[in-house]
Amino acid sequence: MSGRARLGAFAALLAVLVGAAFAVGRVVDLDAGEAAEPHGHGETAGDAHEDDTSHAADGGTSGHGEPASPALVAQDGLRLVVDRATAEAGVEEPFAFRIVDETGATVEDYDVVHEAEMHLIVARRDLSTYAHLHPTRADDGTWTVPLRLDEPGVYRVFADFTTNGERATLGADVSVAGSFTPTPLPPPAASATTGPYEVRVTTAPDGDGETTEFTVLRDGRQVSDLEPYLGAQGHLVALREGDLSFLHVHPVEGQPAPGTVSFAVEYPSAGRYRLFLQFKHQGSVQTVAVTRNVEP
Image 1 (cartoon, rainbow, N blue to C red):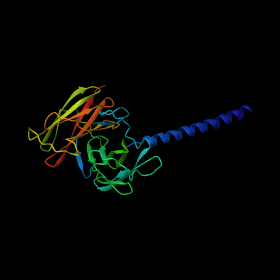
Image 2 (cartoon, helix red, strand yellow):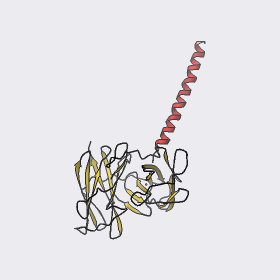
Image 3 (spheres, rainbow, N blue to C red):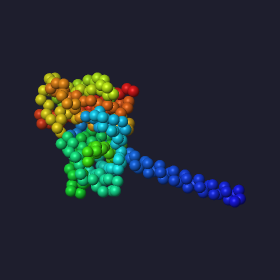
Image 4 (cartoon, rainbow, N blue to C red):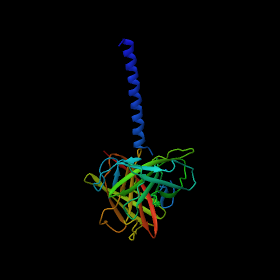
């Protein structure tokens, strides 16, 4: 083969390799998913930054020692399929989605965890809004919930569920068109308020994680009659600033005192997290949020 022919063959081979590498990169991006923000029926925080047993989604281990996994569009053969990736600001519309397996079949068999088969968490990517919703499932396995996203921006939806004893958290983005200025994350604080409630926060090291306690006061007096919400005295979701690494934490058994809810939290890495606590009192679910700075 002449020198010119060898050079031509090498160029052709290089073009094939570059094309293949680009195609693989596109597949990896799609599988990893990127994601999205809300207001819907259920327990919402609205602008939570003003006043709202862990399952980690970041590749470490959770507070209960469960394997943690990324909150991606696809995970362990399961995939989140949403009916739409855009929404109009301030307009309530049904938000529908399905969980499908590696064959593309819609998953229809779910375990009840904390009184629900599906927990849908929705937060704007700057963590200024938050909602914890419980969609209804149709006979064909499609989940639907009314959802209104009040402000422009990109929102992340997390489908948190268990099927065949295996827990998973899958995420996707929903974009709302319009002028959008991200809200800076509030600095860490020892308390947060919503309506007549003040929630005080204390933390203490505990093994590889920490114990986080929330004490609920109403009109300055400690609440002694918190009501069960989804089978527990409180629920905690932690989202890491930036990539929105997800932890869903449930209270430890044997709460320290009436009106105080304790959680064992194991953060997957250092960073700033927004902690969203939900509790129920006098028939109403309340949500407060605080920022937690986790050191290396």
